Image (cartoon, rainbow, N blue to C red; front, side, top):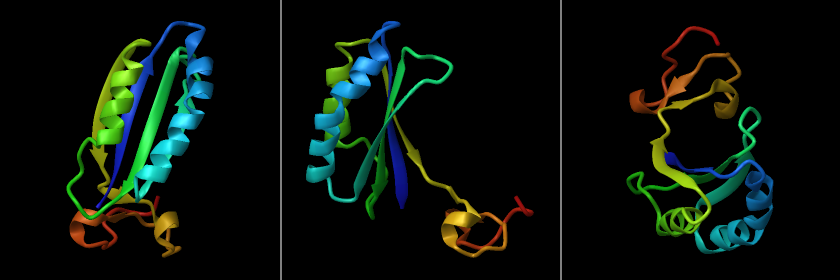
Length: 118
């Protein structure tokens, strides 16, 4: 089951861009060491002091906080307030499934179309 591990950092007003830039080496290291993980880093459009690090997991085990995520969150706590959470995927958009019919599919119901056209 795919899941998203998010690490949200609220830093000082001028810190977000610097933090995001400085995370490049860390992101590269995490992706090398963690099989089945893709890392993205975002800064806030409306809140420029925010940085969001997303670890996108494609695993067979239960969704949980990873050791890499725990270490990263601990490091970022030196720079500001951190919220570290896990988000199991429960819905997969039709475009991603390649079905082309415009309906959404839920992983919990075995992939059957469950909602009206998007």
